[in-house]
Length: 454
Image (cartoon, one colour):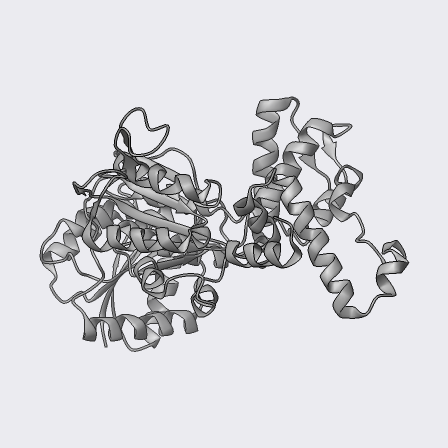
């Protein structure tokens, strides 16, 4: 049995939740405002847990949570934040301030019972949820990790928890799911938000230049090094270094990055002097790094150093509730830049929901920019979105000569052709070609040698 304080200005909801919690065997107290809640918390030491609404007229739930965390005797009180209007901002902010959970109304009896069991288990094992590094507000600017689906909200909660720490974070997800946006949101919610956010794409920089780009170099360190240069890690000092496509980092660089993470020092190319750094590292990849470790193309020790706090961004096909709100948002944003306002017709909405979105949020954003510029009228129809549903090539469109080959030879021919095409499209950049093909650079190098394409 626990003493639970319910804080909500909606009398009907508060009474309903109190009835449910009472039926589960708990002692219930109620407060109709944030000020009333803080007064009760200051005077009643029996309260074990609090259910807290976000939207209230005097003090918001976030305001109450911030003041609670400043009360030494109450700083570790488990708090379940409730809202009928979940957003990326209030979810991340609540979790950053140490909320135990963030739920969207209405909440079912089974979910409440399960949550209280988790709180009880947590209280037995710890002194309470992790507290934030500071009580300052998160910034109110962009970018935001848009969407309110349950799949995305799990990622938003994890970002909020991670923002209260300085731990290394590994963001995973398919191409186009918004990994860099998530990294920027994490940075903006952290204590480092007033320091630099420096992003580097490990797949876009040739291997021979990557060490200098990351660690910097001294004058004369190599041909062309006519001046001394600080690397991107030093540029990110006191802030956040975002390493995108970390799965494409060459093995020799993986070893050097591991040393930086372990020792918090680096040595510029051509120098014998170490430089101390204080930087939070956030890495991202669309690859399965555990599989890369098994294939020995990614260091196991580096994987564990990066995967301290994992954040997975779900593909758009797993969050269909977000498709139409995101489409409307992108359509408005595109209209502000490119011309007249557009709205989606019913058949257009059905087309969007039926599409598989292999390019995820990025594909949806680009599609909305396209129809904002090219739609024939203010109402976007399914005809304007016909490019999304173009049929795949059928058997009749595959060359008969290829179909007549034995399967191993046909596969070899297709693989060689795909590699040649990817190399052409990437202007010979092998890292970019590997990314397009969805394989590691080491695999690409092996295949280029086997097919004598280099």
